[in-house]
Length: 183
Image 1: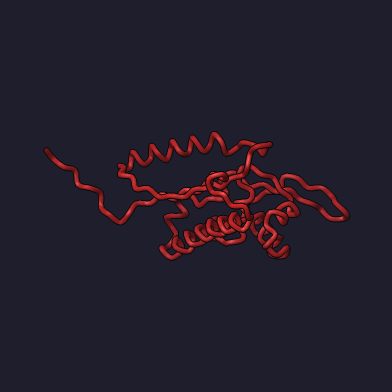
Image 2: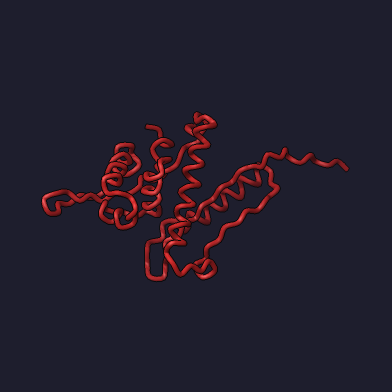
């Protein structure tokens, strides 16, 4: 199964997102984090992620006659590489983006359902800006953002730290590039 088919399933995407940041979880811990997912569905989708090479078993111990496995996300496995993305049809891209956006909406809905919502206090924000950039300027910005995020991705859970989701979407508008003016 291609990575895009594997991860761009609503439940499998949520499972993969739960492991982001180097987290190591058992299925019992995963069930606590995803209580709205039926246990049989959760186990089936974890199995699919393991079979597809996205999750790996990093520990196994015997508990009451059965084995409890601890999983982690394989580095870079929860993304669709450029070569695979090029092979996807427009319809596959639409479905992938819809699954991605639906996941963001579900995350935000869970945040709102948590009660005592204070966007300013919780540092929640969403906005869109338009930037006029060349491809080189865009690549420089993307590289800078990657460096900023990479410096923080591996920070362990600790008192005072709250797990946060940082989501980016970057795309050109349908407008053609501005013509250069000659003076």
